[in-house]
Length: 231
Image (tube, rainbow, N blue to C red; front, side):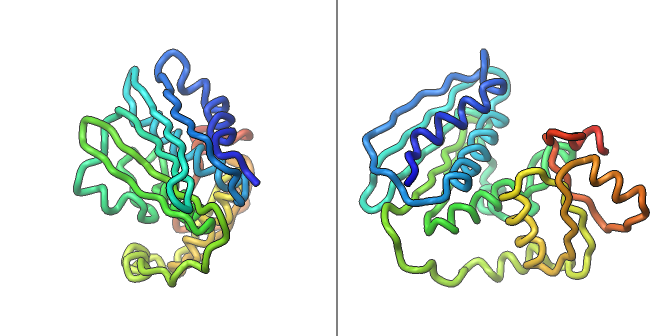
């Protein structure tokens, strides 16, 4: 059983160097029961969403955390007063490979992985945003075991996203094991042949030995030779 409020607090502590003297975090934590879920997975969800919120704020800003019980779910709302998401991008925000960041700042897999993690808990992840005013990401996690999730209704959309990728050979460079598993599953789902390594040093050694890939998807922040240095 997991205390989701503690998971949020731990994540904020880990992100302290990104938030300190720049972003104020406001907490509205209501009394909630413990939740049956994988602590590593839910903390990765918090890490991805809070990191995105911090990156969306240019200069000083604020993040609001709201945790409460709503019916048979616990809802976690993460709101920021950052730059917001344009309407034309909002409906695509959870698509694999879709990103509005520069090429050196992301692969477009972060939010799709986060969405998949929440779905694995039989939960839901939604977003509201207004350009220039900020975004709200809402995570709902069930309080008790629920029926298996229905068959994915987004299959056709995901297939269109992956059109033309079948048969590609991709080197995935990612140090987080959960992200490795989910990114590999997303890539393989659209017919990509994936080779996975855990850091930039392993990636460069593989390429120096003559391994051939059509593309490299590399995390930026890794403990041993990060994405910038490896590139």
